[in-house]
Image (cartoon, rainbow, N blue to C red):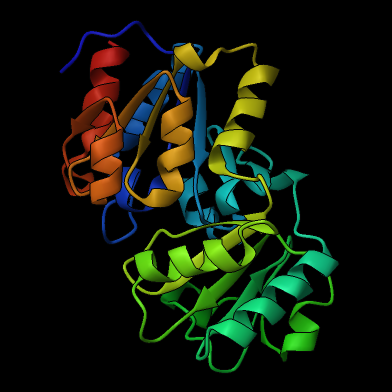
Length: 268
């Protein structure tokens, strides 16, 4: 491990980083998070997840901390379980992005994450967390793009995520900020300029915390802006190659409590 000054703010991704592969939070990690808050430092979960997926995490961590959700589009208070800030994709931008991508990338299917629900086209393959969820509806393209959203998702059955991300950047990178956080051809788009880093930096300013006093943990390309911004960055050992190449340090894998290992040393 590396000797670091005790950070004033801890920012960590969830899926693939602080959470185990089965989506659970280990008791060791819960205890490490408690150490952070008991020290007086701020604890921020920075995730691609929407707030509606945060209840199990909030319960597991005993409603500690704030969550930057939907890759920076929504800030969610785990104590009150309410959205306290939002940065949405405007309707005109949303409609233009879908039109451009549909015209140039055959086979795409779309879904949108709103502040209070989720809608998807019929050929968009939804994940396990949405199959039995409330506020999930199937809709046509016109309905999907009829109101502002926190995140636009585009799924391609045959393209890999890195290839598809490069294509999306080229076609609509001037309209939205795109990234990915899974192994399939699924691209996540936020309002232009909105990232995990922008939302985290704003929260840090509210707490009068400088980037140098922040330690951040991540595993996928959507974490890269946050990891670049933070004064000290860690990847878990199971991270994407781009993330492993970009960080200051590498800790153990998510299933081996890599985040907790570091926090235990920092907050003794």
